[in-house]
Length: 326
Image (cartoon, rainbow, N blue to C red; front, side, top):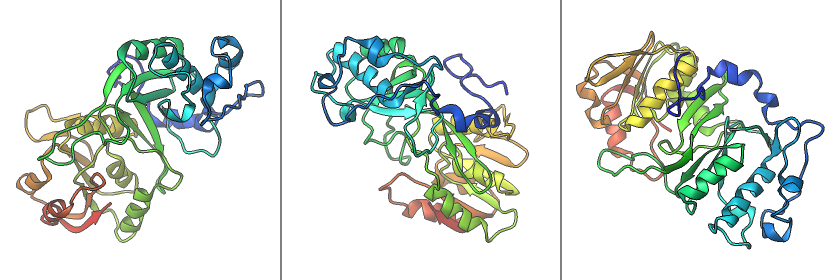
């Protein structure tokens, strides 16, 4: 697979390779240190922040417990005056591990396996975190309560700011058709934390049970998760569409990474790319019927929380025999 990350590094790997060692990726070795840090108590009252080697040193296997990594990040933020010495791990920042993988234990992180999100950090502090905390590959500035992307064509887009490093992440999504890996440039694509049994995949599974090789229109595909799951389930054709162009760009990466080669259309038209069993568009859902002249077995509508889906359902109804709101 020849796709390179925007940062120029080899961050994008075939998902088959990512899955090979995922079970052991975050496991501790017998020598790994466990630091008991109370998340709601000030960090400075629990450990000596100047004693980095004692509290923040890596194991010989190269991994550190997530809480230790976060304590190291918080120390840098305190040193830079972003946080005061009363700060605790709970209010430091949002940790986004990569690959995101649902587990019932605290992960031990190797290098370049964490992106952090904070609404307070500045560029100088972000660059220092990436330089000094080896597990952190990127630092974003933004409010985790605000959804990244665009709700509809009448809304303004919202993105986080990438202050330092690279923010490409991969989430492992479990489906009945095999595990998917979904890459995201996290400053452009909404955050979804992986679950053992993702509710959206559950709704999709119930829908697909009624069909044998259906044609599917994923009207608001985001990074491509549901449409790719349909391809894995044996759909005869899937059309991906999203008005948010960064979502389409990452969908193309995710198709390739999950084993579905992409051919770019090579023109300025509405068809962005295609493959043996799929096509990719970037059009306002209300205009789709003007470009697609086929009737799909299933139309998937997956909007942001709180969005009025009335117009989405009406537009999808012109193209699909069954509209599924997820």
